[in-house]
Image 1 (spheres, one colour):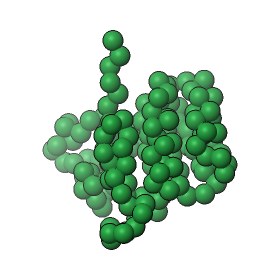
Image 2: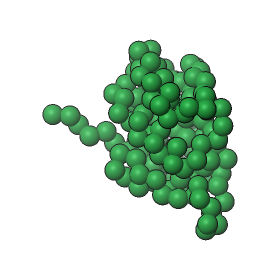
Image 3: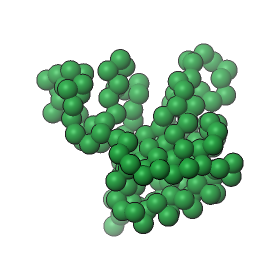
Length: 146
């Protein structure tokens, strides 16, 4: 099941970082994808910076306009709402639907060719045929709980 968090305004880098770290604490979240306007690579842009999520540094390349999430159950939506209430005081909408592809597509096969078997399942649905994968996506693994 997928949900879309649609904030009522574009998110700053700080708000994006806090929101992602809050959402990361929810066990029912499988994957998250940020969508938004691409930020120019010029230095001095306050939103084009490195943010830290799950202790890993990520080069934030978009002005976050939507957060797409693959979740386990409908109960997870209530937990997501709690995090959104805390970090998005200006308002947001949550939509349920299908937003992230789950199966490999022709575009994936064209992009990766013979290396398709090396692409982790977490990356399916994140392909941008015009960009290098390393520039557009980063997989952050959950730490196994003992």
